Image (cartoon, rainbow, N blue to C red):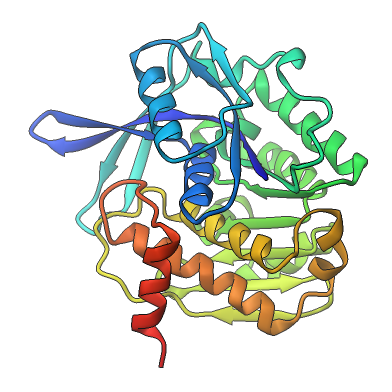
Length: 319
């Protein structure tokens, strides 16, 4: 079981003419759904409202086979993200978060510890940035890191409007990076957080803090990955006609974690394998993330593919 911790919100996508379409979203929720569609047992640790949008979120998670064991029924309203797309399909977001369900965690709502069938815990995005919940979720990562029974994965997925300033964001994110075994981050995030540094230089900086693997996604230019055993590699993106980029990074994360699961790299049993990963296996892991992200970019919204769709694309693109 891979447990994903964080927000489950509603994307209100601007369709033009003053019309908005409501879609279930939130980076952690997208990752959990993406994993489940790929065939990975996945659960979501999230606070979900009892309002109409919350019911839509629960139905979406249920329809996609996400284990509901850690969903907390929250009295607060659902967080909203208004999504605007440019002519290239690149998304920008405006969030409505004040007083909403995702951030008001209480210690009693967090499992302590996570059960033995959980091999990995993934978190990131606003969940690790917006108080009052961010401190409790960071403490959860620290506790599970110290317990040493599962793989910790994070994706900062930064929203600069929620950060007091760049330096405080860097301190927070690098504290969380030190707790992780796997880090996925976008070049856009690094461009804001560490301006002037190259993606591979940033990956090396963060890997030296402790993670076994750090992957930087570069959009249409592919990705770079750095491993604890000194391996560095660059992988190309998969050509696709982009409809929009909503959920693309989350889809990459789901594909990468699913590959690590299938290759036996998660949990206690996979710890040594993850830290000594071969270039061939690391490349295959990044490639699956690329395939899943490409399929997601080829259709509207955070609509990640099934494993059958990934296999079909692999068959079409194989030499």
